[in-house]
Length: 201
Image (tube, rainbow, N blue to C red; front, side, top):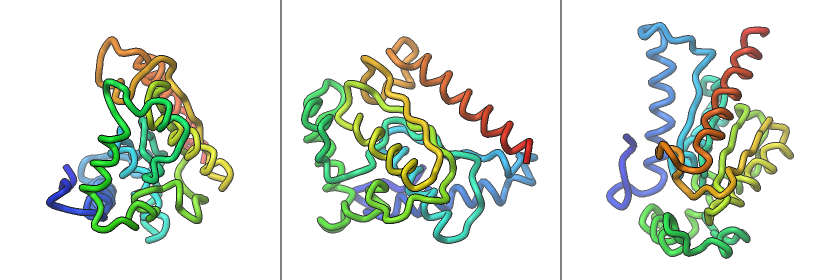
């Protein structure tokens, strides 16, 4: 329930999500939630915010998340990838729409170069929570998932990338959508593996 653009510009949404994570950790004892098993997740722009919030948590020495689950995120607001060109006119999402979203969220043009808007451009992606990144094959943002996963892995952060074949952006909420069953299975496997790791520690 972060505050929305264009009324609230960058980085309001990022800070709102960061505060929500702190709130969850602070309330864990009242809700009888294990603070060692808290994940952050999001889809679309929510996944972008989840990714950037984990960077803020590290940089501000906040609590440690169990993992981050990113569904078809936009990780580079320059919109220059191969998939952006190949799938710029899909029925669900277009390059023109993404440009409009970025314009309305930004205070000024250079905001799109900030790691808090484009996490792929962060100079340091080390020491972040393990990541599961799920993308859709028929999506202008497909390569954002792939390239961000590669960037995390290169920095030493464990990342797994799954691209759902023949799926379109935003598929997960739809019961019969291609890719949903595969994505849900991957999410549960990821969470179980992280919980087993925490249990051993």
